[in-house]
Length: 156
Image 1: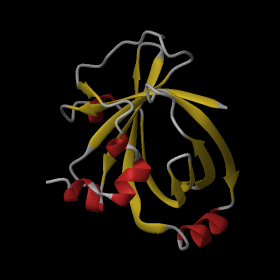
Image 2: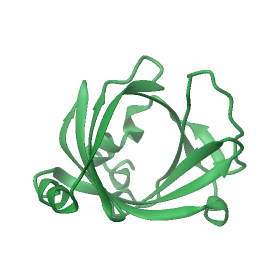
Image 3: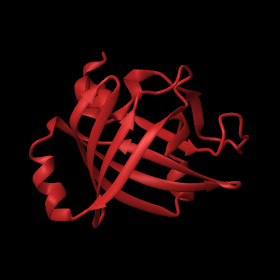
């Protein structure tokens, strides 16, 4: 139940040619407390309720609990979520033994593209794709829950 991931900005759209999958995601937050967030996500034809704890000091690890729920339940719960709802496309890209998830944000977060890779340990090595840019692991402004508070379009 511990999620270990690293997060990066993306420097080009080359990941689109390498993608093995692309899905649309809508997600909202019922709670965005600094110590925990409660998220509703609809991804393609599946839906999930996710609870995440606070990150460790490096921002790499945190508690994560997720359960699949019915689509109709998720749609009803999304209507209760704080605004804005995060809309994005997720591209899955294999690099070596790892799967990078590249999120291309839409609406108020359009222009922001972030890649994440889940790891088995904080010091696990991985093959970096050429389009991987600056690491932003642990920078709260890049957390999806914070993008719902202060969207990318408001950063300037």
